Amino acid sequence: MHTATIINGKEVAAQLRRDIAGMVRARAEQGRMCPGLAVILVGEDAASKVYVRSKIKACEEAGFLSRSFRLAADTSQQVLLALIDELNEDPQIHGILVQLPLPDHMHVPAVVERIVPAKDVDGFHPYNLGRLAAKSPILRPCTPYGCMRLLDAYGISPMGKNAVIVGASNIVGRPAALELLLRGATVTVCHVKTRDLQAELARADIVLVAIGSPGFIKAEWLKPGATVIDVGINRLASGKLVGDVDFESARDKVAAITPVPGGVGPMTIACLLQNTLEACEALDVAQAS
Ligand SMILES: NC(=O)C1=CN([C@@H]2O[C@H](COP(=O)(O)OP(=O)(O)OC[C@H]3O[C@@H](n4cnc5c(N)ncnc54)[C@H](OP(=O)(O)O)[C@@H]3O)[C@@H](O)[C@H]2O)C=CC1
Ligand SMILES: Nc1nc(=O)c2c([nH]1)NC[C@@H]1CN(c3ccc(C(=O)N[C@@H](CCC(=O)O)C(=O)O)cc3)C=[N+]21
Ligand SMILES: [Mg+2]
Image (cartoon, rainbow, N blue to C red; front, side, top):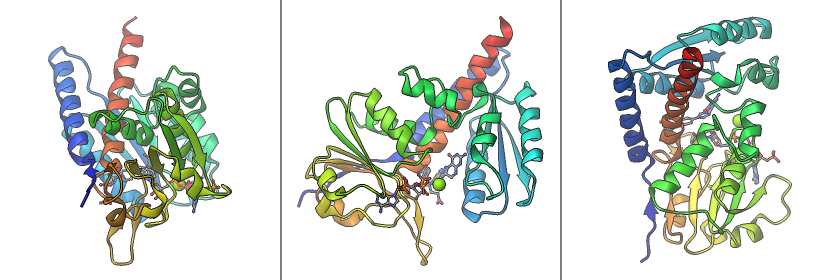
């Protein structure tokens, strides 16, 4: 029976992290400063704590400086904004990440827009999103960028293909559409109000799913030979992590698919390091001149 190529994000991410660590060592030998990342976590979301821990571990392994800030769930937005102002001015910090979601009393756009675009290593600031939309990206959202790097690593070109994205969030679906458009795909973005999702999927050569619904996408809906990028991360009551695609049935139908875990997730973290290194290099050059 046919079975798909399993796209190994863990391996591609590990290679990218080794390359980044090498570049940080080379900078150190030239007496240049190491990249510094500040991670801010507001509240006690259990999943967020896990991600923040793995981001900090990845920073340490790559030779970055990392600083983490834990704020109580009832912290005022004003206090968070003041911390961002401080980090914006801190010459040792090149990247600032505010873990989402934030508590309901905070206004996400106000918080994201307070970060200077040059340190917005999540790529969520309207300036950075606008640059991506206008075909001249600088810092780009880590998860969609990580997905593109996975396609590159497996020699899968989006050029001229029908790409269907399921999910239209600011952090994944929308920027993923811009990334795929930049790479020459014909892009369709589906969401809750889409009338006929199955009809859209039936034409899709590349499917990128980010909805947060375990196993929602069925193998029968996929075109034989498609490439499937599953961004979803869902923890079942059993503790098992699964994606948004029914992986076991899909793997017998498609050409290539990312697993969960071990697919897109590790690439998000590697791209965060990549963005922080790039932000460091750009700020370094700006300071020198
Ligand atoms: N691997 C990684 O690095 C990352 C993984 N994730 C994971 O990706 C998933 C999505 O995250 P995120 O983008 O933040 O989620 P959001 O909840 O912010 O957005 C979900 C999007 O999916 C759409 N949607 C939800 N259900 C359906 C459905 N049944 N059919 C069609 N569209 C649907 C929503 O539509 P509408 O807009 O109409 O409501 C919305 O646009 C989660 O599992 C999250 O954990 C997220 C970030 C990084
Ligand atoms: N400002 C901000 N930036 C983000 O990039 C951001 C965020 N907020 N909020 C939450 C989402 C989610 N996210 C993940 C990153 C790595 C894994 C990851 O490494 N996953 C591993 C498994 C991890 C596990 O075992 O739990 C994997 O898929 O193999 C998952 C999810 C980043 N996000
Ligand atoms: Mg979300």
